[in-house]
Picture (cartoon, rainbow, N blue to C red):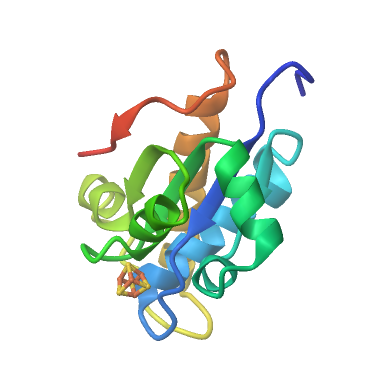
Length: 142
Ligand code: SF4
């Protein structure tokens, strides 16, 4: 870990009940707990929705990577509504379009393809954080 890198807040959507939403959460855990724990902070969408002070503060002080499970883009919208800056919007569907062999299924527990899709997504974001310490600006598209 490079200690000079700026912390990045990672906000996955809460898509409970939807496989693509579950992928967004799994990817965020992979990114923050496994791949880049030193430079990322996971903030749950629920805490932002509730206006929890600690979550709002993190989002206000650091650029955010949002990971959303559908075109509603709840995480990206909520970060902006909370006064934060979305440095990178990731849509699970965009990543899936590039990895059609990894169709996520299951809700409480993802199938193996869904877990792999989450890992691929997390690795892509992790690589974008390297070098500059900042996520690449702009929306990720296939
Ligand atoms: S972005 Fe879509 S899947 Fe995620 S919480 Fe919103 S409506 Fe649900």
